[in-house]
Length: 337
Image 1 (cartoon, rainbow, N blue to C red):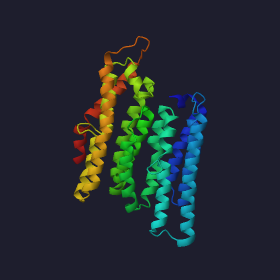
Image 2: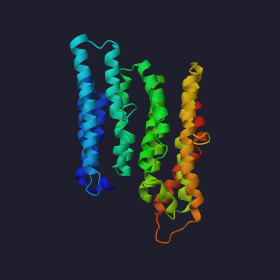
Image 3: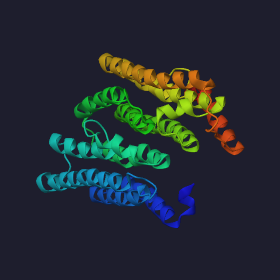
Image 4: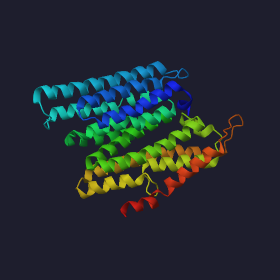
C-alpha cells in the first residue's frame, strides 16, 4: 500500500508496468531492448528505501547485473543483424539471446545475484522481482528458443533451486531459491506451449502473492521469527497450506500445473528429466515441511512481549485465498471441460 501514498513510487510503478507491455508488444528486437531498459530504470527507484540498510548495495547489484544482461542482448541482436542480415536459427546467437534473458531472470547458472538482492528488498518488491520482472525475459526468450540449451538449464534450475534452499535461515533467500526452482518448471512449460506457461505463471504468481502478503503483514523475515511470534493458529495453517501448494503437494492448487508438465514429459518418453523434476520437488517439500513442523510444534511457546494484531479485513482475504488453494484440485477439474 506504500506505493499508493507516494506519488514518486506510484509514477515509477506505472512505468514498470508499461515498460513490460512495450517490451512484449514490440515488433523489433531494438524495441524489446528499449522496453527492458525502461523496466530496469523504473525498478531501481522502487527498491530504494531509506529505512533499508542494504539500499545502496541492492540497487547497485541489481543495476550491474541487469546492465550486463542488456549489453549482452544488444550485442547479440546487432551481431546477428550485421552477420546474417535476417534472423536465421543460428545456434550461437540463440544461446547469447537466451543467456541474456536468463541473467535478467536470475536463472541458473547466472543465479548468484538473485538471493543476495532478494535479501535486501521489502516483501512487496520481492513479489515484483519474483513475478512481474520475469514476464518480459520469458516472452522474449520464447521468440528464439534453443531447445537443447534450455533442457540443460531447466534441469540445473530445479536442482540448484532445491539444493540451495538447505541451511537457509532467511525466508527471502528461501523464497528466492524456490523461485529458481519454479523457473525450471516455467521454462519446461514454455517449451511445451505458451498457454501452459501462462497458466503456470498465473498460479505461481497467486501463490507467491499469498506468501508475500502473509509475511508482510506479520513482518517476518527469518525462520526463527515463526517460532517466537505469538501467531494465531489460522495464520500458521494458512502459511502451511500455501507452502504445500507452492511445493506441489497433490491435493493443493500448485500440484495441477506440475502434473500437466510431468504428464507431457512422460508422454514424450522424457523419463529421466521427469524423475529429476519430481525428486527435486520432494526436496523442496522437505524443507517447507521442516519449517512448518517446527513452527506448529512451538505454538504453545508464547512470549508476552510479542503480539500481532491482524485486521478482520486481512483475515477475510487470507481465508478466501486459502479456500481457493485448498479447493484448487476440485476447481481445476473444470480445466478438462
